[in-house]
Structures are given as structure tokens and as C-alpha cells.
Figure: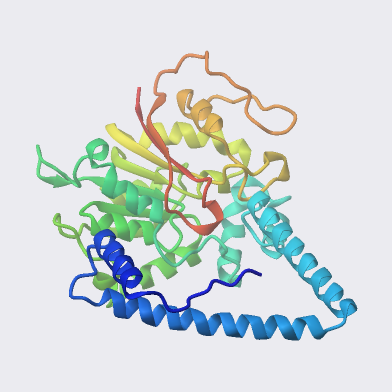
Length: 360
């Protein structure tokens, strides 16, 4: 190890070094640079003495002990690298225990009984999707994409725009939309989730957790219902025509057989000039590993939404077959923007993308 000598320098050298530092650092003004440098020099000199002492102790140890220590360090470094690699390559987005519970719950359950399955998971406390906060990607979208989404209040009618969040769980994203001035409606098929959401809506600290924007706070309502039926619309004013629909962890929770119906329903519920906002998750998870959450891809979103209600073709690995040359059907949606989320929940970090869609 090479040790730097911080021995005494001539006054001329010291003045020169101080002038250089003063010239290069605008913060060094009032003559404190020389004093600070002297303190740092003495501190580093003390460190050099300590390092020399430690090296001397190590030299006295047997080569066998040093070899063992070096081998242990090498193994530790290898394990750290392997763990980092495993985490970067892991696309499971769930712990093995949670993955097994969800897979077992829905493996042989008919699609029309999935609501019962989700409700049982809520009661059991098996809710790895519940992050106790709104999506950070949605926070950034509402902040940075106002040029596309517009304001929460329609200037022509002076009425609040209406938002639907299907599969809302406890309603964190519903509350976020309302805090920005939208009238926000949350829909879930699990009674337990709706009950917990309505408890959250009565939290006295809600205004503190979700401060309102300049548009003031819009109305919020979370209710039980089936996204694929129209009964719930009675609680939203008796109509669809939502100005914004937000999908996050909803499409990926549905069995693949319902995907065409999901796309068709989105087109039916979205207002003619409305926006569908999708936080695409989970991307990178192999579809053949099953779910929920089921692995998705940007191509899948495109194929589903450009031909709502129509079946899409999958290859042997479960990926949608490219159909970019196919025309957008009547009632189809087109993507007008897409970007990688800079902030999002941990399972989707570095992979999640946000896309915005409108009627063709």
C-alpha cells in the first residue's frame, strides 16, 4: 500500500495550494480554506498511522488464516453478485409463498367465481398487491401529462370529469384522483376490499394524506360490482362515458379468457374524448408461468385494444402473435403516448410502463 506523505510544506507551497483551492471553489471565501486543509491533513495523517498499524497486525497472522479469510471474502462477494443477478432477473413479482397461494386459489376456479377467491384472500390477509399508498407512476402521470389529460374540471361545462378505477382494492388511486379534482369511482368484486376502502374514506387524516389541488377535492365512491355488467353504473349517475379509466393490476388479475371482454368493456365505458390510462404490469414475466398476476406485454395491450372483443392469437410460450398489420376495428382504441415509469411500486421498478389510449 502506498501512503501519501502529508509532511510540512514551505509557506510558499502552502499559500500556492490555498490560492488554487480558493480559485477553484467559490465557497471558500473568508480565509477558512487554509485552516480546513490543515485539519484534513492532520486527519488523514492519523488514518495513515492506523492503516499502517492494522497492516502490521495482519502480517503477523499465519498465511493459512489469511487464505481462509480471503476465500471467505471471495465467497461472500460471489453470493452478493449472485443475489443481485437473481433479483435483477426475477420476474415473479411475488414471494414464493404468495405465488403459491394465488396459483392454488385460482387454478381450478371458474372465471365467474373469481370474485369469491379474491374476497377470501382479502379476509385471509393475503394481499401482496396492497401497497398502502397510490401508485407513484400515477402521481407522476397526473402531474406531467396534463397536456394530454387536460384539467380535472371541464371548462366548457364547469363540471368535474369522471374517473373509473376497476379492481380498485382499498381505493388509494381513487383517493388520488379525487384529490386532484376528479369525481372518482372505485369498483371491486370483493366485498371485503370495498368495506376496507369505505373505512379508509372516513379516515380523519385523509385530507392530510391526500391534499387537494387547486381544483379542490372531487367526490369519491367505492362500491361492489362486476366490471363486465352494468348494474354498478346506477351508482355513478346511471351512465358510463368516463373521462378517464385507470387500469393497474386489473387486466393482469383476470383469467386470459376474459381479456377480449376487458378490451370491449373499456371501449364501451370510455367517453368519446376520454382517456384510458394503463400502468402496464407485470412486463417481463413469462406468460407460461401463469398467474395471477399474469405476465403481460405492450403488444398484448395493443392487440386487445385495437380490436375490442376479438380473440388474439398466442404462440406456444403464451406471447401474443404480432398483428401490427391488422386494422383497428370499429370501437377500437389507439395508443397516443407511452413511456417508462420513473417511479413505481417495487415489483415493477425498471420495467413498468404507462400508456394512454383514446378512441380511434
